[in-house]
Image (tube, rainbow, N blue to C red):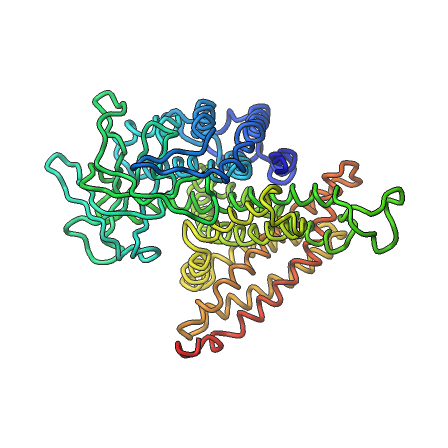
Length: 589
């Protein structure tokens, strides 16, 4: 199993040269005391923790998996101890408010740490990820009492969090859920029902688990407008706020699944469990989306983390594995064969992986900066603009990055050939783990429908137009030697605008649904092109590069614009072909 190494050098490059973190923090409210030395220390220590503590448990956690016995769930060997060390290091509360024990750092920095965690051990990384998401929902919508009682314990890692949405008969259509909440005379509620697919819903790593559960009150309107959100802890806090008596909820079983074996995916049963309302009655879906939108960004980051691990393994293998000779003649004349990296098709696969992973890393940092502006912007106008950009790009960062991450992991497996299919090399685990990122937190098809429908057609293309204006402005003063990139970007933007107009203007019932995935991919490829433009510009302004990192960036940018951006042309053709090809009777499918 190849060793994962956190991509510290590339992350520091992006936060120093492409998205300078220090000047950015000065633009925000409340980050005047964030300094470069502290950020570098956090990134360096995060890399050490991920390399030495989390990554060594990844393969063993996958092989042994979580264990279910008589209602109890046991994490794989080493996970519990690693979680305690991780929590004691303050990593769960990195972005949490200082008032509740967090470090109060900007999302731009935190997201880079999240990638290291997810790349080192995705199954483990789901636990703090869900805890932070639950914290955000409580922080935004919970009462002062709930916030003071739960957030310090959760941001410290003593207590973990879980999100309980899905039921066996109600997945995306949450309005069909049957879990109910009966009010008590003392202001609490009794929650009864069953939820499935609850990641880390039960485990032995933290002393308490705080569930955020969607349920319906007796007077709830029909459909999704009748959903409320409840905080339901595994153990009820006592008067001192410590773990008290056991609540009436339990784990009925855990799933046997394709990947992320180290994490427990639970069926959770609530039998009149005590809970507290979060937010207003019947407004639970809006409250939960505070958590969901955070999770969707981090799921995109997960994809990049796993793809980075796959890329590292494939690159190292290609540099060492000898097989055949280079097309132009032997490179290593003293050996019987050349390393497979000399073959053009192997380099193609590695460069596709590199441009998708490194471009995706730049993209999630770009979106994280907009998230920081939305929350900490110095003016209302800046915050409103940021909220619009986040609304547009959240489905893209979730769906496009995870789709391309899975593609990258498959390429990594392919580079290794037969060895890629064997467990000991790690690539087959990366493929299995990456697959779930395309499914949970809203399937990628749902993300595409959100982008094409709510975020494009519903606003007559205003959100995408604003984004493309930003990109055009960046292209207007690009150095002449980047003309190859500018021409590719301009052509793709014209195609994207044509497709946007078609989506807005079409009166065919299925046009949006037929075009949605291709449209999201188009926006994704243009967005990564924008990121590679930023990188290419930095390198053009640098002049002669002596460091391999910088030379590699220049070559990767050229590869992206020559080999990846042309995909937007075929996507445009598919979109503009309309929905008529889908009009086939059910019996002919």
